[in-house]
Image 1 (cartoon, helix red, strand yellow):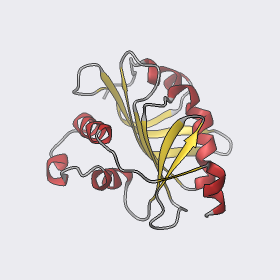
Image 2 (spheres, one colour):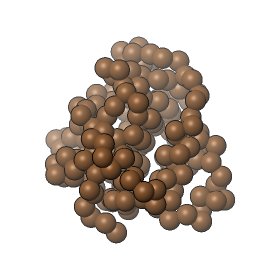
Image 3 (cartoon, one colour):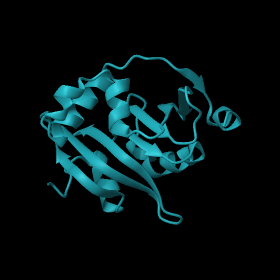
Image 4 (tube, one colour):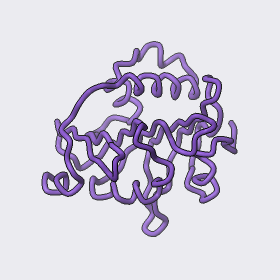
Length: 176
């Protein structure tokens, strides 16, 4: 397992000690792409993590091209933005699964021009939710190593064109 990620998009996060419990932290099988699978620390006090996180970036980029993970509460989205701010870009694909979002709620929440797909999560995993959301082949995914899984998820996300209702963060708070 690689412990240092050469991608500029991950270097600040790594230096700040935010990349935790890494199953992968380094190159994937796609040349020029780095990935991460684990937890991303958003705050230290109180401790808040983006759990079951998947992230990817092109090696030369300072921003993540893909991010997915789970938060316990919709109200914690601003902590995600604060922690990752400079590592996000308008062209990225970002999926946040939230435990306290009502079933069936699916939104695009904009933070300063950066769109997040905000979706509910119940008793399943972010990995399984991504497979379903991105229409990936579960049988093929089972045979892949972690780096291959990240590559397949990133490729699936790059083709993702589903549209959801666009709302502000405040509108989402009012719907909880």
